[in-house]
Structures are given as structure tokens and as C-alpha cells.
Image (cartoon, rainbow, N blue to C red; front, side, top):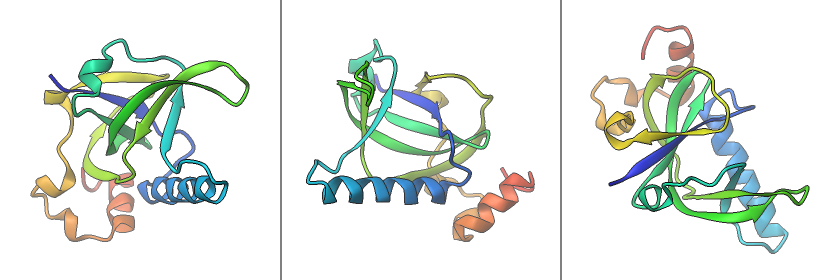
Length: 146
């Protein structure tokens, strides 16, 4: 059974900022001659690794809302820049916008059951998918749309 992870997107104010940051990261890695994979480092390795790798995604919380997801390709043991061991969450580059779902702040990551995950925005029929992303984010911040 598929299991997802949810994590705060610290330092990012808009979904577009995440897209820009990840594209720059991939470009920097490619220029340095390294594998241009998105590997988000976090302290703990999920114990339910098999379920997460069975089609799971990392759902990003941006400014108090689960706003997007990326499919998890791998979970691997790696090290931080300071040499401490950590878990590397390898992500698919494609970022899929989800229907906003409010989420309180927390530390680290949390499991997210498949039936509790917000649907992809393209699957919703709220009419906001025709809006430019910046407009949708501003209206959401003003609490005029979900």
C-alpha cells in the first residue's frame, strides 16, 4: 500500500520559488559534473521505506498549505555537508500542484496515508487551474480560495 511523506518547505514563499530553486540546483550539479538528481536531505530514514517507495510522493507544505508534491524515486543513506549521516529523499524533477490543504507547522517529515493526500490540482474542478500561478497563490494567501 502506498504511503506518502509530508514536509515543510522552509525558506520558500511560493510554489514558483521551489521550482526556480530546484532548477538552479540541478543546473549547478550538472555544471559541477555531478549527477543532477534532486536529493532532499533529512535527518531520519523512514521505517516504512517499502511503502513509501511503492509510488509515494513528498508533499510540500508552503506557507501553511500542502501545495505540491513530487514523486519519491529512492530513499538512500547519505551524509550531510558536515559529515553526519542522514536520509536522502531522491525526488522526480516534476512538481505537481495539489489542491491546497491547511497544515500546521511541524519538525521533520510526517507520514501521509494515500487516502488523506490532497488531490492533484488538475484533478480538481474548482476552476482555478486556468489562473496564472501567481494569481492563484495571492488569492489563496488572502483566503479567497482554497
